[in-house]
Image (cartoon, rainbow, N blue to C red):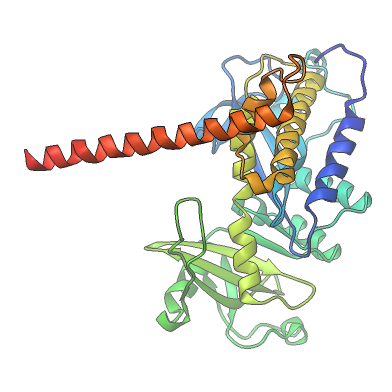
Length: 368
């Protein structure tokens, strides 16, 4: 990882090209998020006490910012950057020991995302939309970049944000001459929305249909018109700032925001299947090579899943099959497929038996 002579940038370009070629469709989407890698010491590149959603608190960790690409065909992470805190870049000796190139400067997470998007666009790759959470939605320069590139977006925003509520049709020329409504918080707008304007959509999910309610309205932020999509579950309301160079209907935004969580599945599968977060390396080059190899490996598994989608294999099953040296032992491929079917049926029977025992134990407890 540290001293081998190979151009990992070529592998990254192949990975990026393969993902876009396989997954692109009319509603493909870029999803932005970051993940934490928990650490104990202070020598790993970029490590410091900082908040990470991986642990749900401020702790000693590294932060990787990732750009994922998803469509109805599947999903994968296409690019990534290591977030370097300012404290690191102010210590030149520490940077030298970690192998950080001298031309690296401090960039916020949103700037890292902008850099990855600029590189993808320069290579000719595009998506119909970009989604991100409120950590990125609060960056005005990221919104300006996306609008300049004519890239639609649905960005999470904080509920305390104050905007102008436009109940009528958006008119940019009128906005340029002054806004006609007083500023109010997003929470206040949600309270003013009529009950009949909330729509419950039973969208499919991993744990059954969702019970979210959705509402859409129009606002102005920094003198520019945007759409505001609200998602409600009980008392919890999330807000998303939407913009598109061409008209998009309500359901389009709902579908894109629902797909937003594919990036979380990317992180989960990469950590569980190929050890994305299981490394003992400290240097800049080593870290980037490890992350790249992990993402490429999980994409190879995903490609096999796409290729044999009629079999409905899971990534753990594919990984398990690849670990057995079928070819070296001269065992026909048909036998391996038959073995995998047997394994799946065996797992199903075991699960069914477990549920049966659990129900019997529950009935006995209620009877007692």
